[in-house]
Length: 385
Figure 1 (tube, rainbow, N blue to C red):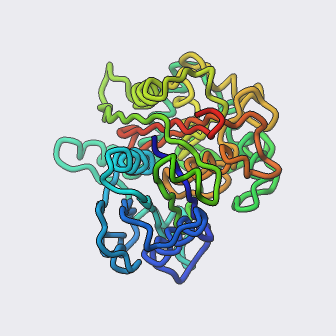
Figure 2: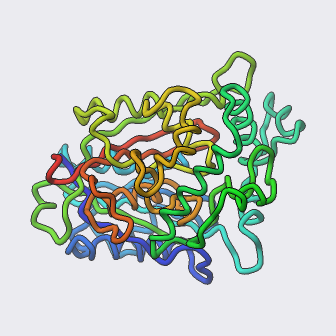
């Protein structure tokens, strides 16, 4: 069995004057040091490039001074990439293809002269060919398409804005206790409703942050991890699903995601059930994705997650602690590394004031594209393993 033995996070948020390569190199070095290893111990490197230019590529290995790597690859499944990287690293370690694999993501979409919204406008989705009708209809960005998905979900199941807002409020409560979170000011439901529309039905506070920064993890064997500096976090199970739901009448777009298949696969590999999961670190590019992912994982029925959020179950002291660092809505946005980072911190028992009491088993989701890609990890402590 493989384990995550090291965790590295650079300064995140409004971090200017540094390239993605510099941030990635720092994150890998921090992760190796966190594990009690040196860069010379690393014989595998998996890189997740994002949108900012120059984007990360295989030259990162040379910039890090890594020699004679046994595994080196660049991959992307967008927001699902972190889970895919960890799964591939675990497979490499389990197969003996590498001993110590670093998985890294870094991005610098923000600049000191533009807003977060403007930063991602350059990466708007302009459909081509037959799908150009979507662009003509005004679906020119990621948020337009997620708004369409959220609207269908809400109208189908009767989910309310109060219930979307409950996700934002509960995650802000977690973020208040997270020293690295960007948004630590208490948030009320009234303030959520007062935030401006971005694309109806999504308010500003339904949408994730835009952050610069880098994050990395070190994956090695469970045996080796036990002798290193940090409590090992075992990679017990993983799964992927890439449904690419079409925007057409009669389809499932907006109502279900790849979380259903990938979650089922990850739990089956781990030999665990939903009742064993104590922490849920869910990819939250929007409040809506938290709800639909919880439903697809099976924590409640279709259309029921909104009421669950409104009950307080997802927040501090709730029965189903979810996105315990504040998530991408209130902490920082580094694609799938955001939920993965918090899961590792929690399973280690190192989350300080926000530490959840029962924290031996975490489920981590990644969501990429417009509900097109999904990854799931099941992580456990030494005790659970």
